[in-house]
Length: 191
Image (cartoon, rainbow, N blue to C red; front, side, top):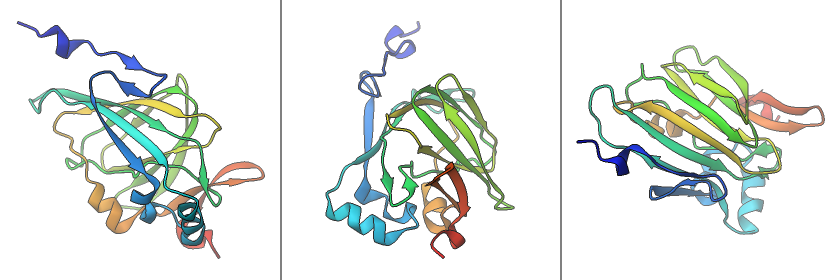
């Protein structure tokens, strides 16, 4: 018998969560290594810690063929010129893919090939679907003035490898410029 309570979930786009799901909140103090401009980060922290993003997830099990999904919400803001972002991750099962569906707000997703280090950004906004290939680290940025909300869908056995990203970080950052958001090499950003 199918348990309807596990089949149908309600997305609360006003609160940025899946009703009844566990919510992981990421504070600015947890994301220091994500931002390239440590001076700007320290100034922001002196002004007080704050929520950068949250994710509520439904993970019904790890069976073959199963899917997990999560509703993410990234707040608007910047550290210096760098937009607020998610920690980003690779999948533990590197071949696993993920689908992101933009629900609200304006963002961009940074994609980085694990082997070559080649990076690119793709626009991510309401009614946009982004396919993240396997072996690809991915991080989402809020480049607008309102929260970005999205649904991420991935294989139950994909797993999340945050440690690989924490150790190496992404090769690029996304910053605000007079012409709009721009991807820059992390090594060149503060020169």
